[in-house]
Image 1: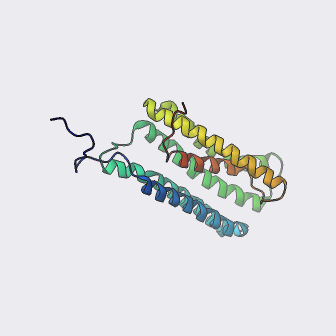
Image 2: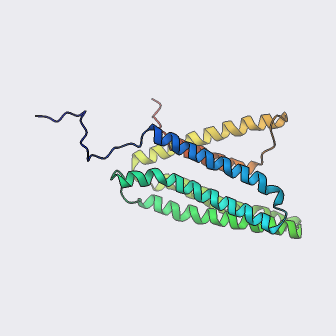
Image 3: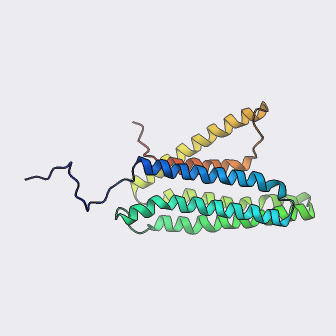
Length: 215
């Protein structure tokens, strides 16, 4: 007799984590992001001194580590249930590119801010100091966009590109709306460098949901 497809044996692994898990996971992502913003709001006035800059750097490291840890929870749970295998080569290469780049960003940002406060450089030195923290971020962006190119699973590659498109559209919408609100002095001014963290957050949210083909 053919097996009833509606029946699931007790030892068969579930293929999903469920809406309650994803809601809690997303709430955790938003909470840690909110805590980071609050911490930086409190630390920023103290960043005139080296201890203040150290606290700012520590906050960035803790925030980055927290986001990475939270982003790995779904994978670890699925791996524990036997749904996922070992981390595949494209993602290992991505981690080896992305994580050192973010660490370099934190270190160079702290050093650049400290040197600028102490030496007040001008001319080409000021340009070099200002650009230095951006260089590791460019390497991180390179790692992000190399991932789908190296992904050999067509389904996963398609999901990545759709998530990238969604995150880019959401970032453009947020920055455009905020820019007009800023122009009319309705909200506080935001520096342009926040575009990358906004995109990364939108990307994380996009990866939580199935993205259809739109056909």
